Structures are given as C-alpha cells and as structure tokens.
Length: 332
Image (cartoon, rainbow, N blue to C red; front, side, top):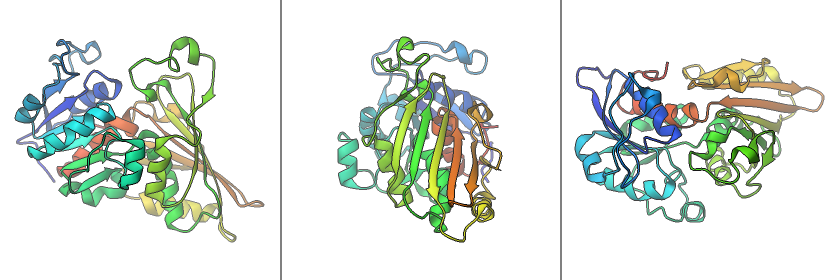
C-alpha cells in the first residue's frame, strides 16, 4: 500500500469542464495526491473556480503540454476525444502516467476505433480499459488507462456477472436515461434549456459509440437506446434479459455477491430498486433487479452519477489502484 510521505504530483487537463471540476474536487482532498497543474484549453485566460473556493484556490491556466509533462507524475485528461488522441501518447512518451476520461483509446479493435474515433492513432502499448472492478490487476503496469465510458460503466457492471455465469438466454436490451451533464459542458441545441426542460427524448438509436464499448467488454451483442432526461446529473439504466431455464432470483443474487464482494463502490440492492438520488454525488454504482419466474424475464436497474463513477470518480479510483493507494481515497 502506498504511503503519503511523497504525494504523487498530478495534473488535470480540461479542468473547467464538468468532469474536470469533479476531478479537482476529489484530488484536492486526496492525501496521496498533490495538484501540480490544472489547465483548460489552449490559449484560454487563467481563471479560478468559485465552486472549489477554500478547497482548491489556484487558477486554471491555458493548456500547455510541455508544462503539464514537466510538473507532474500522472495526468488526468478530461478533454474531447480528438484532443486526448493527440495529447495522451505525447505524455506517455515522456514517461507520465495518463488517465484519459475520453473515449479515444477505449476500443481495442482497429476497425471499430476507426469508425467511432477516427482521429485516434495506434494506441501506445499496454493500454488498460479503466473499469476498476474488472481490470484492477492490470492497472498497476499501465502507462495509459482509458477510463470506461459513463453509459458502459453502469451497463457492464450490471451485466458482466450474468454473462460470465451463462445467465443470459437471448437478446439484451439496455434502456438508458442520462442527465444533461452527460453531454458535456459545450452547449448544443439538444441540451439548450428550452429544448430539454419538461421533455424526454431518445437519441443515437443503433448509432451510439457506447454500444460498441459495451459489446467489446461483454462479448455479446446488445440493443442500446440512450435517452436525455431534464435533470443535471445521474444515469439510470433499465436492462432486460431472459434467464435460462432453471435459474432464479437467488442465482442472480449469488452471481452479483460473488462478483462484487471485494468491490467497495458497487452496492447490490437486490429487490430494492435503486434511484438516481441514491447515487448522486457519489462514486457508487447501485444494482437491483426483479425476476418474473413465469416468463424467466429479468429486469435490472443500474444507477450511477455520470460525473463521478461515470467519469472523475472512476478515474481517481483507477489512479488509486494504479499507484497502490486505498481504492477509496478521495472518493468517500
């Protein structure tokens, strides 16, 4: 277990975005991390973050990759995919450990990566997909951690134990709901207050890049339909599968309890179905379910805060494991 005698010097690029602010909030209270650099976009003017006053008061500077590499041991990238695709390899080449919150390096298949992230170059060696609960052992040796996407985190954590146990008989349908912050801070017509307030809309049907990420990790096809709901943060996914003959709710419970007995941030709620308010502003993923014994239909409910477990919190969780810290540091 790492000590706090010599804190890891960390930097955050994209520090003014929603996930970037959450990263600074977590890292500012982390006893094993010292924030050495916080940067926004290239050419931006220095600015302070009122939400972090008295927690972290230094200014956010313009993005300077040379200065970022020179002052840090580890860097968190909360940048658009295209920017991370360029910056992450450059930082790795200079010996920095990189925790990338974008999707640029998540897909291992070259054709899928070319389709969904065409600006991404060939990844550096030893990239690890950053879903802590699944790749905990691999994190220590990875120079580049491609932190899992927000929608995929909730889906994979809910489905992986069942798929691995052979408890899925037939198609998987994922009906996902996202708060508006899941679209990032850059305003668009879809996220304009007048467009989303009082409404509910589906998008990306058969054309969302997170479906490829979910299928990569599960090894089975899924039907994934995301929706935008008029709340600021939080994801709720309702997942429909059919159990094989002879399997019951007790088998489902045993699969989850076995999979996550040592995972501090997965809470198994069983028959008590979770809600977004239960996980907001936390790094928890809550998973509950109901089984119709007559039809063998299983309905899973998986909830996370998209800015914490779906982004900044998960990145810090990966950082903790990679550097030998207690997994919960900065997150409780």
